Length: 148
Image 1 (tube, rainbow, N blue to C red):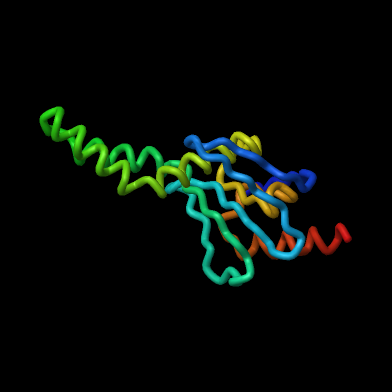
Image 2 (image 1 turned 135 degrees about the vertical axis):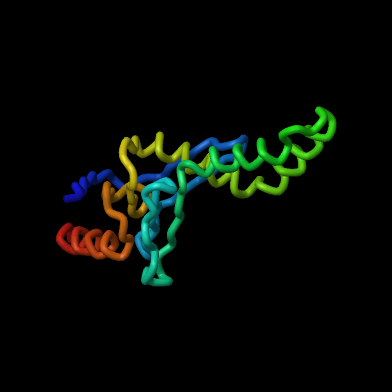
């Protein structure tokens, strides 16, 4: 049987420095924001999630996967060609790399030690071990209604 852990943290504003860029994440009382932290071995189902929920899905092994793809692409090439190819791949994967680095920064910010972890509204509520986002949202809504 799966253990699901919870942690409640005050709403707050988070400022992160990632890959030389400044990211500001602001709490919003009107819309639900959800951050999913997991890896390829522990996928979280997002099927059936309402369109009014903003979901940021962080696959924490994405950086390793991209590095593996880049290494495979340049393997066996002469140094000048490998350097040229690596620069092209960095441009091609920039958005994915930035997203992966942001996810890594956020796991440190939220002090996440287990995956999957689902964070609601920038830290207002946290669920560990749930692999179905629809069920996690239902639990969060129940908690939020009891809190009122």
